[in-house]
Length: 539
Image (cartoon, rainbow, N blue to C red; front, side, top):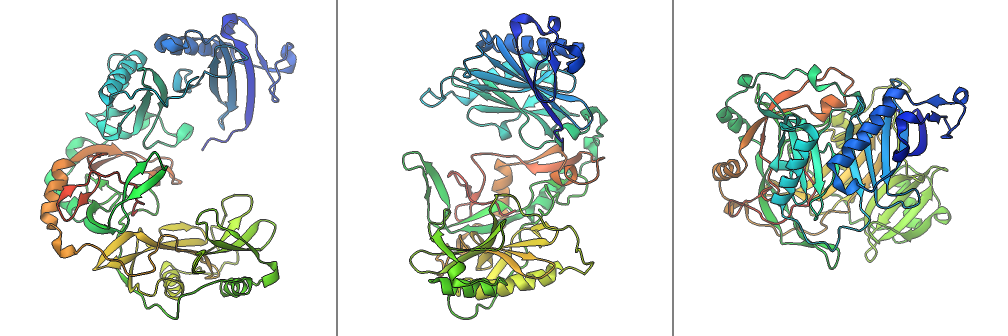
């Protein structure tokens, strides 16, 4: 990633023409008249900045009166500058404003228009008009061939239109242009969208090697590889829609659905699944039997909270524990200060006192860091050993009616050095209930439970649709691929991009066509659901 080493800000008016006005920069952002005391923006870049401003103003008529500009320069690792230009109608008037950046060659790249009046209250614009306006812009910006980009309906909706780079006649999902069009038909933002290639450190497109599409397995073979990933799952509380009046989600009755449970990418040469990021992969794992022990755990006093902290390896006393209200759940919260940086927190249900969460919180809101290897050279707990500890905690603190759970994601769905996490869901009739979740995190050095969260778990047995009434897997597969057929594309996974290997290359993949209106299938009818899908992803 790019490390920001130096930041310099200065202002000019475009009326003065950058090329004729010496602009000297200092590290603290001062503009000096004496060249000997300041760093000067290279003359060729002054010209590029001027030309870039001219281009955006010619392409976007709403910038006609934007005569004042501010430049922001950030120095990259390689010594090059990253230049951002902010346009305003005057120095005093901050809104409306238009901000855009230059690529390494000095051409205008991304941009964002902060309108003076909000979009709310304006009439909606039809998506066909959005596509038309966005296409016209692409031809103006890149030329008649739109720079080799093509409109991608799979990732476009409402007032956004996404264009994907075409290579060998196939879309390359990592190189895109995403445009936003307001109700007046004006293009107000341009970004990359979708997957990216690692920012400024990404290899140039011409340096990448793309396999011949003829090397891909047949579509029939790919469909057979895909079939094993189409599986049943339950939602106990499916989100139906967002209510603008109440500003809350409205939920429906428990449902049984079919969904592709894998990363959604199949290697087009091997037929194997392609994890889209490290730690992803086949979401469904073997079912684990659990044997809940004891009675339901409650915490209703600071004395009981101290005993609970002790069970998690933290010595505390009742008089040192603070009581409060949880911002997330509105339930009771007990906190113990471990040190100046960390608090240990227990959360319970307000009325029952039922224990639902334990964890440690950084008071400075920073992400906790764990060592990448054992500082004492000892062998860490294996994933299998960690799983046993997690299951023991689940049996002790989880719902007493749960007899089977399924780890969702890989066995190490969240592993960062010494921290290892598991996400378990309740299982009904051999089918996972994806929104009935318990998450547990462990320290792989000590084996201590450092996080246990049961916000989304059901404490009583669920009444769910009968899986015997579901349509057959064969019928569901046929309908799924009719509506969302497999498409051949190029793709570079985040697992490759974020790895230590800088020589990653795109691969040929098959994936099901994305449809915002056809995401999951009602297993009882064999038809795609029409409700909006907001539930947590299983992978």
